[in-house]
Image 1 (tube, rainbow, N blue to C red):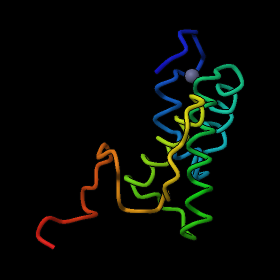
Image 2: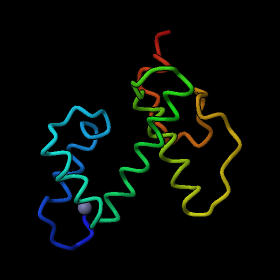
Image 3: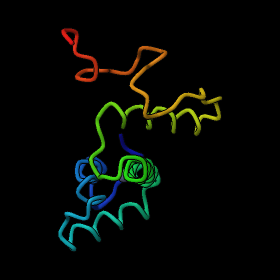
Length: 113
Ligand SMILES: [Zn+2]
């Protein structure tokens, strides 16, 4: 993913370290590089905003910082719908059930359970 413009810090590099930045596990020097990138690259800033929203939501709902992969993809999917202006199905995000079957439930429902 790239906005096509040249930046001092490459988009892929920024996205690779997005979680470190979110979790503030990043050296100050690198943080300012990434912050600078967000200032000039809206696709990356948008991506960062989404991840930050997911993180906040999970923290509020689950009381911890770890975002389960399937939950994260569900939340991101909903945010995409909202952004696309589509109607969002009224279905609890934290439910393990998936109506459209597109969400991977690996680990959630072991077949031998
Ligand atoms: Zn970028």
